[in-house]
Structures are given as structure tokens and as C-alpha cells.
Image 1 (cartoon, helix red, strand yellow):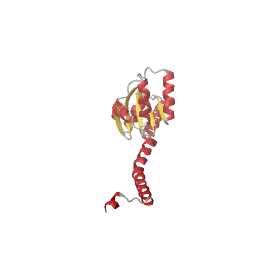
Image 2 (cartoon, one colour):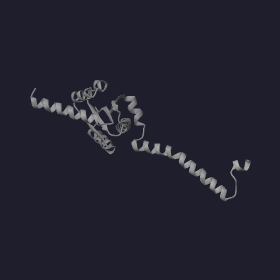
Image 3 (tube, helix red, strand yellow):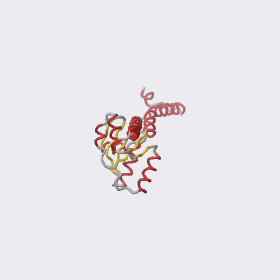
Image 4 (tube, one colour):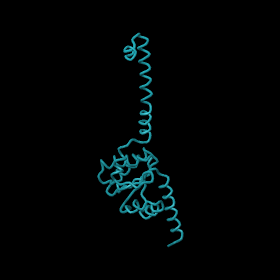
Length: 173
């Protein structure tokens, strides 16, 4: 094999290895049968969630996955595959699963989420979760709830004192 071609292939594997290593999640899909219009629609939806979607040669993707120790992921690289890379652990799964519901030709295969190889079922489970900002908002509301309840209780006690009505505990004493 020509040294230039071999060097280019090694560079491609190295670049993909780095891309895989820098992503919070990767989802592999089989896109056989989708029209150009459908793929464009899918790419647009993924781009809106800051997800990179690209087709790689299976041998390149297999070597990159094996470099990172993802043998189970590498074994599924058969057929026409595309990889979706996300900084948000659930964004690729959420967008692809939603798109797959309306397009039966898009097949969710496997993925890597925070260093763990996951199957199709786990991808579907992850797709039900909100994005990172949504999760942080829910977490903040959970943390905020006791403070709000405490403030409302203090306000109610202050209003009761102003109106001259004693709280139930004081009235019983």
C-alpha cells in the first residue's frame, strides 16, 4: 500500500479516536433507505442540538473504537452506519430516537455514553431524559423547594401575628 495512503488512513483513525474520546455520547445508527431530504432534515435537527453527525468507513470507526477499548461497539460496525457525537450525554439519543419514531428506516444500533457501551434499549431510555439544562433546572427546583416552603411559612406566621391570631401551637398552650 502506498505510504501516503497509509499515513492518511492512520491520521483519519487518530482524528476519529480523538473525536470519540472528546464526546460525552456517541450513537450509531443505520440509515439505509432514508432519502436525501430525510437525511437533511435529520442533520438539521441534530445540528440544532449541537450534535455532529457523520458517516465514517467502518474500518476507520472500528479501529478508533478498538483504540479506546470499545470492542462491543466495534463489533456492531456492519452495513451503512453513521455516528452522532454529542457534548450533552442525552442529546444524540433524544434527537435520533424522536426521528426514528417517524422514520422506520432509521435504526438505532448502539452507543457510548460517558465511557459505557449501551444498547438500543438504553438509547431509547436516555432519549426520554431532558437535556443538560433541563436536568439542571429540575435539580435547582428540587433544591429551591424547601427554601420556598420555609419562606412561605415565615410569611404566614408574620401575617398571623399582625392579624392578632395566634398559631395553633401557641393557642393550645
